[in-house]
Length: 203
Image 1: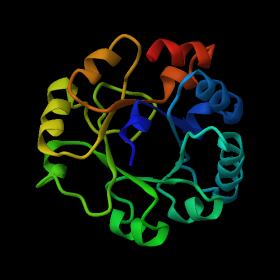
Image 2 (image 1 turned 120 degrees about the horizontal axis):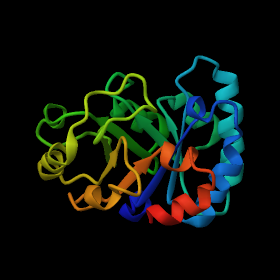
Image 3 (image 1 turned 45 degrees about the vertical axis):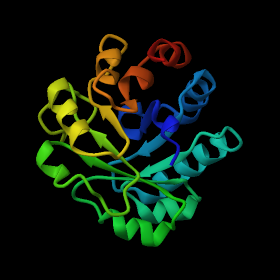
Image 4 (image 1 turned 30 degrees about the horizontal axis):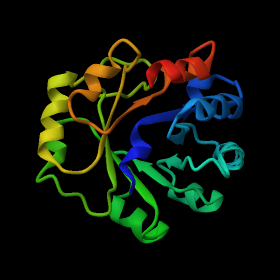
């Protein structure tokens, strides 16, 4: 996996979007420099999730920006997504690798140093680590680990990493200074009046 795609990672959260169409926001942010997009939906309406994932797949066609699906390996396969991002309670990454093949991008959420173990992860391409700071965009988020916690996890594994959780233009540089390959945001772009300008500011 090319580590450069982790530079500015947008989670297009359907719940946070609160009924707004994700496609125009994603298109504007990608034109402005977002390098990776994940669509996330914690609801149980699989058909609606599928329809929006297909819409984003179409929007990203030809841009070179990969689309990942949060949690749902079945939807990733159905829409021809570039991969999945999995949480600690989802199917193991090795199963995702078996299902999606060797070229799929597979990410795994890490919430604390204990989850890193020996730093080796079967089937995993990158880690999404956090929340670094307090966040309101994920109701079941773990306690913030802070910059020191992020740096400790960075030192424990050679896998590419992004920091996630409460990241904004105010603290993005301090997150990158821990040695992670990129930052992952939700509200910093989805909640902005001008998603393209917000993207440029983060970059």
